Length: 142
Ligand SMILES: [Zn+2]
Image (cartoon, rainbow, N blue to C red):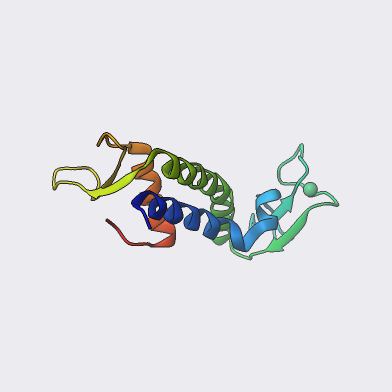
């Protein structure tokens, strides 16, 4: 397997990990709504738009979490998954096309490893995408 294929697979794998378990949750925007107790501790999923963000409609699906902090964490997590997955998938396709190679960088570098193009130029966006992929899905370094 070539280095660019390994990079592309690492990025695709992390993107898939972000997308796989919660397909419905990516197409329905998650937001916080108040439960009967008045706490903003319930998640509402809906594909529609709401004039009042804390109101629910007949299409909303709600899940009471029972803790405002945990509910906020889940909303933030769900909101971040698809943009991160899209970024990783975009760079995975790019890595396969441009012959990107991961190399170890020197002790003064901002990153442990860097992704270089065929001329040896650092591809900062690919390097960051690979770091994000490793944070999510693991994978070995160069
Ligand atoms: Zn709704």
